[in-house]
Image 1: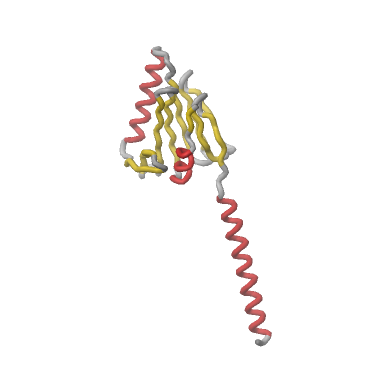
Image 2: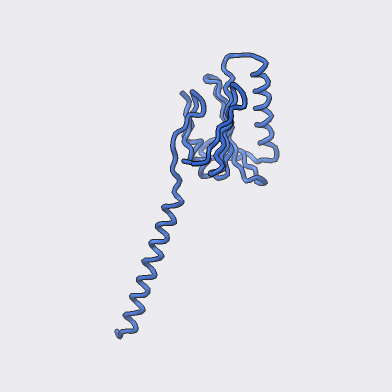
Length: 157
């Protein structure tokens, strides 16, 4: 081997090393970190960490959590055992929102849970209702992997 061949081999090894470091850094940056969040007193799930979360109290019984960084919106309604006019109004608003998400979306399965996928908006929508805790939750998410992770960690207490 002459000097030219040795230089080509060394340059090739340097390029391969830089590519490997770049691929490693890219994979590390794309890793999403999750933490458990209590959406209601009796309903929790893992959601991606975010610096851009807002929580809006629509009424005494209905809340909306919006994570614009990760494209997630979670609407929760806990009907409790009450039967007031406010609950009827909240329940109607929740049902309207639920049905409007289904309109134009196709039903699919993610993590053994029925989910609706809206191709036009590129949203995955999951619905949860529990008669014991009276929790009703709508999760809307842009990514199917994120949605799959969130719905697989849903927990009722």
